[in-house]
Image (cartoon, rainbow, N blue to C red; front, side, top):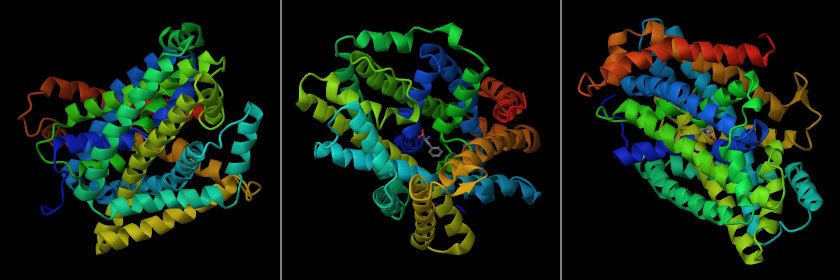
Length: 451
Ligand code: PHE
């Protein structure tokens, strides 16, 4: 497949992949997990997970994708005569399609909150903001329609192709996102009593650290770096042969970590300045923060501006991740059915819309419909996040560490020996052969109460 398209530049590669990694996981999930798991101690453990598990995991997917230059299913199958390995890729494709459906629903919430902050509807006491969110998320039409809108925006970027669509959108949105983030962090850290939030973020409380904290940090690092869903592998199939894979993974890991940290620096000082405890869990962004924005900034105009900018930031972060999720299945359909990119994208868009609408309804009108005792939304989240994600991550490490000839892995890692990073390669191999699979196995068994 030598005529395959590529990303046009090194910057494009880093920004597009960082766009996949930086998402709701950084701005929404990471802060509330930090809030629940003891602040700074969690952050230090999380950084360790990014460096020693996330980065090697990303390098592994880079190797599979770039070596094969094809969609995820074919990529895994291309290494060995045993085509059964292709199943890892297929699992990644299924996971990314399902996640795309429900990620779009949450992205739709962000879009709604953006619109509502622009028109100034998010004003009221905490009880009002809470009932406002509950009424909205269980509405049968609005969240589903907004999720569908988000999928359509993603669709129109995807059909423009890898360079004109994905790369261009990432080059535009990622720098904007960084600037917005810095502006809001600045505003938040200048608030009175902001130092309490900073202390919470930077002063480790070792007493909070237990096995669960490690496992949460590990799961979050994989999710946040978009590992095990085919996204990284698919993007890497558009990398040039001269891309330095370990360096790029490190850069993306560092960007991803700092964006999460900055999101914490945005939320905690503001929350502490109005005496709100930031451990409220998933509702942090949609219930706690609108209140915080209203009350933290003495000047209502400033509160208004910060709130609008924040929801723009959140929507953009979600969009760049959705693009990468969409690309996994689009590339798969296009190459395996041999159809046009446009048709493949339409197929994926329609499938994701159906999944999105079902997920959205399961928060309201269909909340009584249960699969395995959970709502459909929770079932999808469980199957993808707790079953498929660790499974694909585990199998990818085992595959590269134990089955693919080391020469192939080394050639990709060192760009055919031109990079002089042979020592680093041995360290990488050690992590991928032993450390990563064992850690993933731990999370997997622990979440089912088996250890
Ligand atoms: N990494 C994204 C985030 O932090 C989520 C994601 C996972 C996106 C997997 C694509 C693939 O929000």
